[in-house]
Image (cartoon, rainbow, N blue to C red; front, side, top):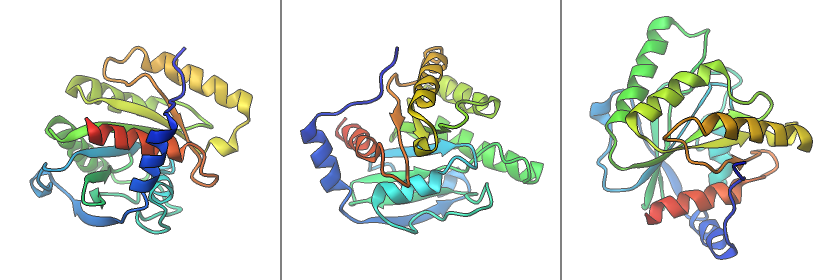
Length: 214
């Protein structure tokens, strides 16, 4: 069975030091013409609109309001670029699966995500956020397929693991690993996180650092 991601102490410590450096908002992009140059490596964060993406990004960089959080799902409507220590881009993609948005809006966001994934040479990996209480859902399937077709490496990051029991988490990890094993672009290791408790954040930081080195 696919294991949860593990890193050595040296990598964890180096990643911790990296994420103590400033992370600042660069720009929000509404079409691919507005994407910044690809001189820096970048990692992106994708997921359903209520998966807790903004909260995870804020916890990851140790800031309360870097990414906007809202009780209303679907708040992120652009590809938002953040710069970490002038060494890498962290990219917040629009959440998908938000049924209450207008169909034309949803189509526009989806097209933007598709164009981004297909044409971004500096993209090292997409972290696919999955609510640990629910696991993969039907609304995730088109994004998995898109990343497989685009040959974009992606890695599952479970969110809100503090809200499930350890036995339930094991089942979600196993089910997620089993499904992702069918997808050629999926990275085999899963990261389990909690924005509120800080669980798994050192591992996610270490994963990003490792990708920056490649």
